[in-house]
Image (cartoon, rainbow, N blue to C red; front, side):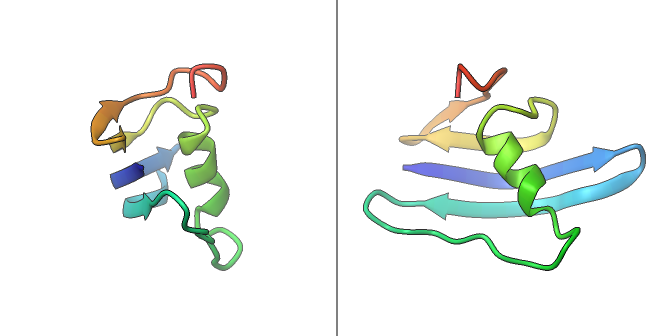
Length: 73
């Protein structure tokens, strides 16, 4: 349903996400876990449209998408 491919996000020279790929399938519960500073919140902000500036590709139902805002997401 939703896939994130090779998502990379840097903040002022600090890499928050480095080529992260993840799939969310219909009817499946997915958890994102990790240590503090691992990039969980950054990934969720990209998926929800809070952060629009990143490298990589999001696909919704196999079609490329790029959310420019929370409303759009």
